[in-house]
Image (cartoon, rainbow, N blue to C red; front, side, top):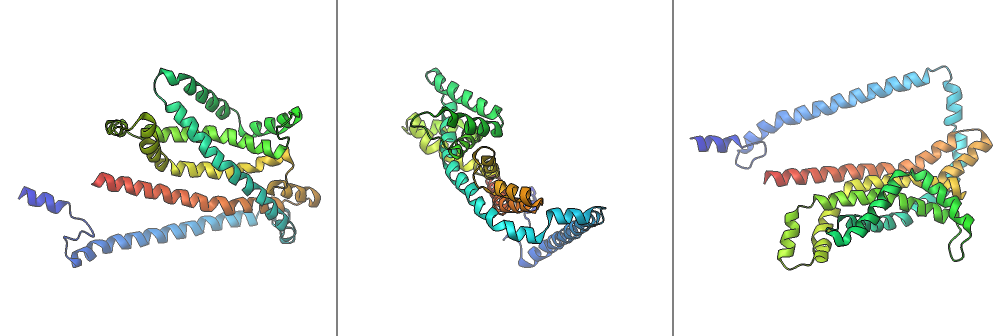
Length: 297
């Protein structure tokens, strides 16, 4: 009897061992509770947003604020040029991100190499990561963007845009390297031992066993770094004078004494970053469901 009782205790909604009528009876209250939760969340959200809008609209200087930040004519005038400048931000992101991934993975592998013979490589990688994680990205971009071109070294590019992108690459590769290293260290040692027992060398084990698993595990955190990099491409404007979105909006704001163009630049970044954020959430949810499914088995 105890065995039968324990077996029945594991039955749940949707279990094929239950009759269809029983499944419907169990799922009905759950669906009703879920619908009630959605209704409560919707109503509470509308109430909160309504209160916020009411407070803002009834503020003493709302009309002046609206004219300064939500001028439709100013938006229509400036947004085409801002959107065109945003292409510079996208180009900087597309150039920098692949290089960051490769450099960061190399640094993570260097920091993960065991044994005293690889100590110099570990030391170099550690110094690199500590240095560029310790300096704010804006300072790295500023120092490289103004410093290297002023040297006029023969054969070395003197473009401030080039060195601003290099600054982003150096800074972000240090952060991404730590993400990769966390992924590498999360792979259990039994995976390495099993691969070595099959005759794989240390490098083959790293390439075919450890790194693929590590990369799959850190894709959601990497997406967060992608979002941050896309936003920080605006730092190019501080040294390069490139016609990117934020600089174009500043030019319009300075000439027309209106902040609506700055909101136009913010809108350009939101169009890219919000979908990437939702994709990150979806990846995290899928990863969590896979872990739960594996634990259930």
